[in-house]
Length: 515
Ligand code: KIV
Ligand code: ZN
Image 1 (cartoon, rainbow, N blue to C red):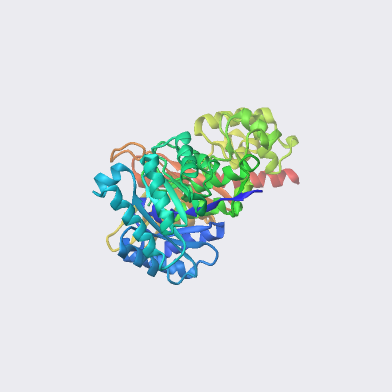
Image 2 (image 1 turned 90 degrees about the vertical axis):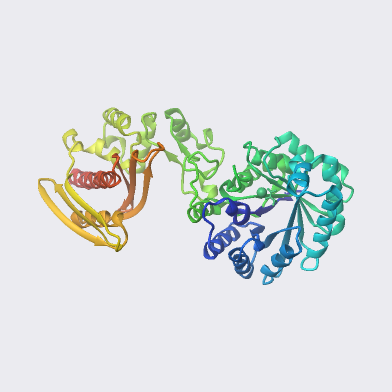
């Protein structure tokens, strides 16, 4: 029979404690709700003793959650436990999560206690917490570096005291998979009352082993996995829940395990959390990175077009993404070009693939990535038009004043004419520049994204500004290279405007072709 793995999310506690700027109550509530929507079983909402803000968010979250169980962290300190219980008093069911260092290093150099004092602190804290709830999780902090007999002794005693979940954290990400799996197997072999509790694991990623260690732990019998969305957390982070969840799903036949997760919510959850926490998801991050479902080399693109399974073990749709992506770069082959043209509605009779492919390679060598609208330009415009820059800068004057008002005055060549516009705004100079361009061109664009790229650690080395806008349901990209941020921004905007202009021209050409 398939067994259930409990998914315990600590994004709001272990994840949040690693952020440079703490989240406010509203942001934490938003995260809790999106985690609940994704089907997370237990949400560790915070460490209420740590600050009034944390207390307040745990309280509000405990009032709001309907399906996920709420949990709060506490040290083996009376006040911590009382405050944790108080913060969750609105919830029908809640869990108190108590932790204490158990490794010789933590016991001696962090806590300055004897081993028997540690046992007393742990058991008396559990007994106190039992007054508020039956659901008590006990974490042996730094279990990964705790001698196994010592760990077994503590675990046996905290179970006797009433703990219902025993969490084994590899707090500093020190173990490798066979070592961590062996710890869990030893607990099952040596602790006489281990069958009375759920064994949980909480792995950190210092050696990049968090997910692998968690998998070996569930193979050894652990039934709760702790982690965070996008792997956020102290130092190198925690087990990335999206990775472990998908591994359990994909390996269902060998692991014979299940979760309550609604897989199709994973991508949205990851995106929302990254936006709220202001953390960047690396492009090559497993499952949720921008490149996780995009194929670049010609051989891979051709393989995917023949059968997606050639290079995809998980479908993007299964995590709630619309589709995979075939990046158009100089490594793409004719198959990818034909595919993109077909997706845009252009049969092979409408263009010459050899001519298009040669022009595409030239552009890709120059710009790196080629977009769908570039393909249309290369396929349907003559070379002279392709190289025409309809919009060209004459000059600009941008001001940002201490009274909060910014203004942009831009003089732009539009074909042979010159147009000048000035706009004032209270939303900063980027807004002023953007609105001025909109006024000059009358293009009904929606601003989507801006990225400043400065790779070198020096004050005068801005490398580029990248902008994305949406125009008529299509994304257009512009890039500007200049050390000066305003000049870069203006060049990026003009790049976008020329892309839009060419795309409009292509539409006219295609309409005339049909006549
Ligand atoms: O990493 C750790 O040991 C922890 C405990 C508080 C569970 O985060
Ligand atoms: Zn941790």
